[in-house]
Length: 88
Image (cartoon, rainbow, N blue to C red):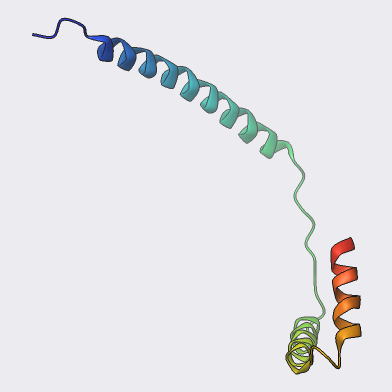
């Protein structure tokens, strides 16, 4: 026979806290759903058919150039890139 059911009290308290927390989260979820319904639809952005291909080529060219850099010869480029990267 258990004489000190402290764990039972702890379990009951934890359950009550969980129920309160769950109710609060459900209310917040319902409020957010209502707010989403009232938001205007986002505008559609149309890209030029060749824009994606041009972007891909540009990134590939950049990747090739970065792979070809030499740490001694292109130290100035490295430093300029690092300086620019740290400010953004």
